[in-house]
Length: 276
Image (tube, rainbow, N blue to C red; front, side, top):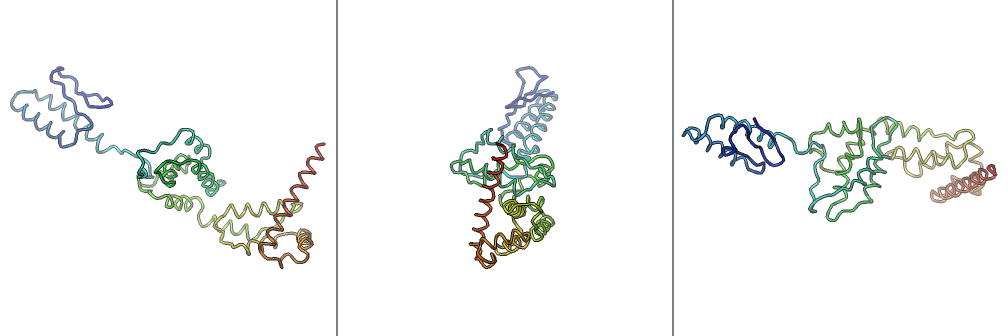
């Protein structure tokens, strides 16, 4: 018979004077020495054989606890840092958990990472690299299927933050999603009764939705202008004093931003007057 407490294995069923304990901090060699010494004493008649049986049973349990039980079940290895410890405050962990990613089709991993990094950037620990903080907190930002995916990697196999991001995006934003996003951008069209500001915001939203679309700035402007309705293009040409496409990239972009800002102000004024 045996029982466990926080610091040692205690053997019971024996008289108090013959009780033996093994502390967890004892090295394996010392434990083996105890067993050999006890065997010799049993042979010489100093102890009863059942004491050796109890000792062996508890040794097997001790060995299992010490050498078979994993100390860390996470796929992300504990970061090695120069600091004495990494203390994550509960409020920070709760904040990360308020923005958890499940892996559903409607969730965007890029949006999740952007919010996660914003939270991580609010914390600084002396002698602890930013990537170490991110590696420590990232598991708390996942839930459901995404957490199952993370834990499917071998234990302690993920040691680099860039590698974690690459695997995460490859899983939840594969090439098929990139191609779909590029198709949505390249076939962009202004909708009926959609203002310039609404159209511009929706187009920029598509660009953010697929950050790896690969379209450079001139191509983005061409795709946007090509998707506008004729009356919107005419309005832009009038403001440009000619064809807006003749403007430089910076000039055209600045003009669209200014016009959309004015458009938003006019819509706000209309909304305010209607309430009155």
